[in-house]
Amino acid sequence: MSSYNENNETVIRNEERHSSGGTVTKVAVAVALVAALGGWWYQSNQVSSVRQEMAQSQQKFEQLQSQMQTSATVAKAQVDETLAKMNDEVAKARQEALANSQRAAKQQAGRVMTTLTAKNEELTKQLEDYKQATEQKSTQVDEALNGIKGDVGTVRTDVDSTKTDLSQTKEDLKRMTGDMGVMSGLIATNSTELGELRKLGEKDYFEFTLPRNGQPQKVGEIRLALKKTDVKRNKFTMNVLADDKTVEKKDKNVNEPVQFYTSGARTPYEVVVNEIRKDQVIGYLAVPKVKTMAKR
Image (tube, rainbow, N blue to C red; front, side, top):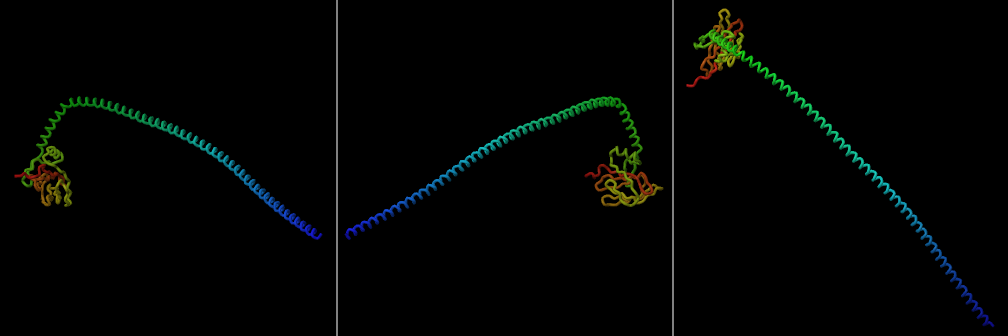
């Protein structure tokens, strides 16, 4: 009987052990299942979150792409509009430039035409004036020729009369011997006779009015200094300065040829005083045309 009870107790303990081991296993399986379900749920949530984020990103990308396309379309429209405006402005500018150029060319052509017209009128007037002047000159020449023809006889008469007067004047001119004993030829006693001597052209004549101050005065190529006058006796005294030499001509008479030589002269110079006053004398200097001594 005790043996049976022992066996019974052993069986019961084994069964209890087996029952305890099965419970542990079930618990372990349940824990693993719960862990697996938790992992699956976590992963599912993660995937869903990722999918949601991807959907949002896709949506944002599509929105951004749409905005970019819209912006590109707007920008292209603005560029096209700007280009169209620029083309219009360029075309307008070309038309205005062409119009201005044509207008300027027309204005310039008008000015040139006006200038040419005025110049043509001026030349036409000058031609008419020249023609009238030529006709007038021709008439004057004809009248002058007729007058000359009529005056030829008168001129001849005047020439003959002049020759007669000149011959008479030559006769009136005096021939005297100078203070150096040289025949002076013709001398003049007044301005009229001096004019006749100039016409003969034999000598050069220099008139002078010489004051009595003792200071040399240039007359022609020489200098004269009046030192003394004697109105009552018609005499004078003067110094002649030529070739760095001074020669005194003392107590000379009115209309007397006062002669002196200069360097290289073959005929003497002559000083003739026609009028003697208290403080001055009036006369002329006669200089020969040929001054150089003849070579031997």
